[in-house]
Length: 509
Image 1 (spheres, rainbow, N blue to C red):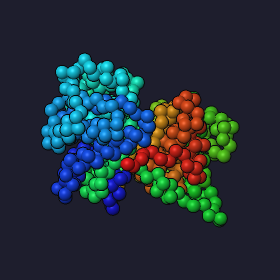
Image 2 (image 1 turned 60 degrees about the vertical axis):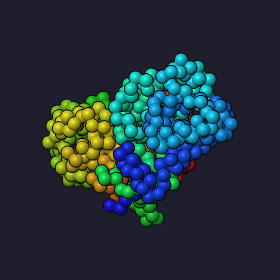
Image 3 (image 1 turned 90 degrees about the vertical axis):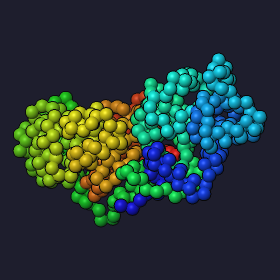
Image 4 (image 1 turned 90 degrees about the horizontal axis):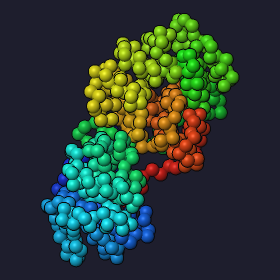
C-alpha cells in the first residue's frame, strides 16, 4: 500500500514526538519549532477574534507551556494586554521561551502563589490560552490543573487550545480525568493527532486549525496508519452513468428485516439505497408490512417472508444484502439471519443482526461483509467475540475487524472504518444525526455504493462522509432540532450530485 500524504494521516502522540525529534536532528531547533507554533497560533487567534485586547495565557511545565510563553510574547508585541500564569517550572526549550518573555518585561505569575488573582484575570480576558498539558499527558490531570480546567470551563470567555485541549488523550480522544478544557479553537502542530477527531474530543476541540511548522517530511507510522477520509477522492469513484446505462448495471440491493411494528426501518434503508444509485431494491419483511412498503415507496419491491426458504430466490438475484434494519430478535429474525449469512452475497450487517451475531457468533456471514455497530452494539459484539471492551475506539474497531475477519464501521462521534487494507476516520457529523432510523439510512447508502461496484471499505468510508455531511448541512440550514432520518437522504443525494455542502472542515495556517 502506498503511503498517504502526511496531511491526511493521523498520528499518536509518540509518533508525533518522533517526527519532532527527527526534525530537530535534521537541523531545525526545538526553539524554532516552538516559535513557529506560537506564531501560527497567534495568527489563528487574530483571524478568529479580531477585537482581542486582553489575553490570559495558562502555561504548564513542558513544551506546551513553552508554546504558551512565546504566544504571550507575540501578543504583547502586537500591543495586547497579557497576563501569564505559570503552573510549574520549565525546562529545556520551554525554559528558554520563558526567559525570552521575561526579557520583554512581562511579569509571569506563579499560579500557586497568585491563585486568588486567577479568577479575576480570567473573568476580564477576551481570550484564554490553554498551554497547560499538551499531548504528553498520560493520566488524569493533577489537582492544580484539574481545578483551573474547571474554572476555565465555567467562563463565557473564548478558549484557544495549543496543540490539544488539556485533559484530552492525544491517542484516543478520551477524557483522561473528569473533564478537559472546552476550547472554541484548537491549533494543532506538525501532524494531526488521532485523539482530536473522536470520542470526548469532539466536544472539546472546537474549530481545528493545522500548522505544519515547516515539517513536511513525515515518516510512515510504525503502527497501522489511520487516515482521514478524503471525501472528494471517494466521490470520484462513483460510477458514471453513460448514455446507454440501465438499471441492472447499478446493482440490486436486498434489505432483510422489519419484524412486527418495525416496517419503517426497512423502508428507510430501501429508500436510501434507491436514492443513492442502486438500480433495484427488494425488501424481505413480514407479510403484514408489504402493503405499507408499496404505499410508502412504490419503487421498492416487497416480499412477505413466512418461511425462510423463501429468502433463497431473493438472495440469488441480489448483489448486496442488508440484514438487520428492524429485524428484531425473534425466531423469525434469527432464521432469516442464518439463511442470509450462509449465502455468498456480500452483506451489510446492522442493528438487531449484530445483536444476534453477538449472542451467536456462528451467525456471522460467510461472505464479504461490513459490520456497522454503534457503540452499544460494538460493546456487545466485543463481548461475543472475546474482544477487550475497554479498548479505545480505534483499537476496538481494528480488534473487531481482526477477530471477525470482516470490515467494521464503528459509528459515533468520529466514525471509524476499519477495513482489511486500512483504517480511516470520518471527520464529518452532527448531533442531529442521533435520530431514529439514521442508522437504517446509513446501511442503505453503504449497500447502494457496494452494489455499484465500490469495495465495502470505500463504500463505508464514503457513506460515513455523506451521512455526516448531510447532518452538518441540515443543521446549518435548520438548527439543532427536528431532523428526521428521511431528511438525511435528500442532503446525501445533493452531495452525490456535486452540491458543495460546507466542504471546508479544517484550515491550514
